[in-house]
Amino acid sequence: MVVLFLTLTSPSSRVTEESPSGGGDELAPLRESLALMGYLSPPRPPLPGRFLLTAYCTCEVCTAPFSDGFTSTGARATEGRTIAVDPLYIPIGTWVEIEGLGKRRAEDIGGAIKQQRIDVFIDDHRRARQFGVRRSWTRRVGGG
Image (cartoon, one colour):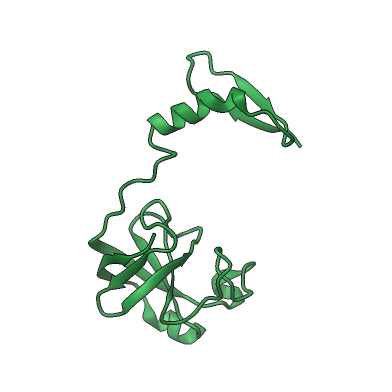
């Protein structure tokens, strides 16, 4: 397998190849460019802040094809603890307190979970749907 990278450091923009078995020195300019543009350094978590909340469960409707009950970090999704976040805003492993819900841990990510949005894990599809969409104040209480 060959991975192609577009180097953003020069106006002529060149493509370099990297074999999975080694090397990587030719990618230093790309990493430097991405770091300068802020892509390799996550933005400062906007905590405390107001977040959009939704809910999900482990059913096929909510999480297919990842409906095995485990989060992206390998932890078992647990009601009352697990939330999905954008790790660029809330680092994985961070404990947050969500107004009206209490303490939750950032243990999962999701394709639609971007920026100041949190998906709260609820172990029942009907109750997850009834949760709806809310806005709540959220603050960091540890970890991450």
